[in-house]
Length: 144
Image 1 (cartoon, rainbow, N blue to C red):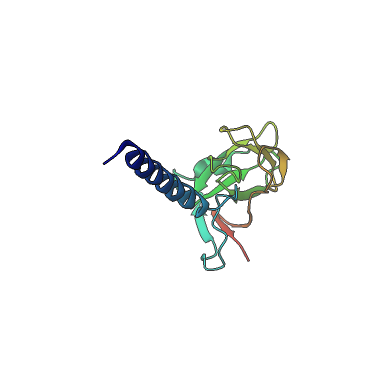
Image 2 (cartoon, rainbow, N blue to C red):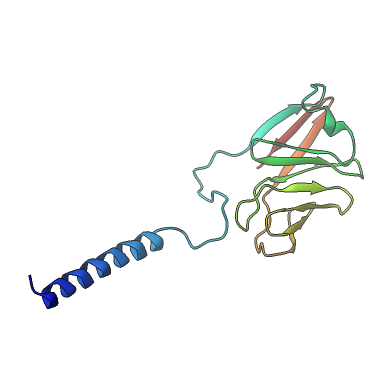
């Protein structure tokens, strides 16, 4: 094999590897929203028994917990709010900030109000909001 032939083969091989890498990257979604968006996803509908020790913190204003991919918070105004626990920017886990009346993502600093709307980015998409209903010690979290 001559040098010219070898270099030509080497260049073709490198180009093929580069193309495979590019095609693999193109197959993934360019969306920053890590939440599943398909209509085939089952709707969230679950209950939390606030009498259980694992959930009892939700009886104290300013506390929150994560269950089934949802962060549920008992606000300082004694209302329950529930939003997706996954940041819409790059999938960080959301935390509740009772003093600021907002949800914060510690990964890149996105902040969302108690309804899930973006207060500041880099997230550009609101968190999914869920409805809550309290009956006795049973808190239902659901979506229509």
